[in-house]
Length: 286
Image (cartoon, rainbow, N blue to C red; front, side, top):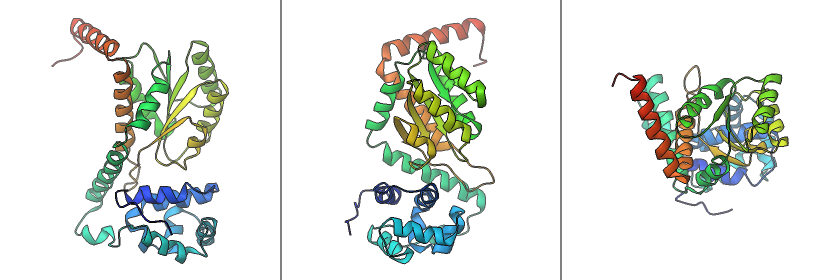
């Protein structure tokens, strides 16, 4: 068995294991579940994994076999050999209510994001794909709508033209066609669970049009990842009734910073121009 990298996070060690295999959509769902629960993976039974992933118990067994193990118990033994935590997180999180637990889960997502960003290479490469695009297309449907709109709001302050697309169907295809005709070469996509079917259809159209696609998503096994030129991973909180998106939103802001750093003089000039106009128009009270 391979020796674990002591410096890698538990989720990174699991990703390194799963990425070596071609997995079915159901198996990717199980892999995603184990990554999200990396801190307790070695304690989960196959039934518990099935419940967390929303699949059948035999699917978990087939998943383990697809990875080259005799069954799920052998996979779980291997997870221990990878150096995953051997003390369940719940043991150190006593007297925590669900709200505090949700905050700590979001903190864990941000900590994993910080670990990833120790290597700035992927962010820099994604920024290089997007920065030259005139206009820049930003795509976010359903759960991806809010992060896309937020990114578009700030990007419009420093980029000549930003087009936020947040409606699916034939209208999305029309707007992608129009953006490409106007000169767009890059598209930033926020693909967050549950992944809309029409998002994949839109990305296939964008790829056929020749757009370079950068996707911010919560898992390398997300359907949009296979349609993208660059993928930036940011975890989604799932402790509340509806998911929370602190890490994907922050990832978007960091990506925008990297894009600004490519042409700092132009960025500064546009920011100064915005501040001048804001002052003349009295946009803000402070």
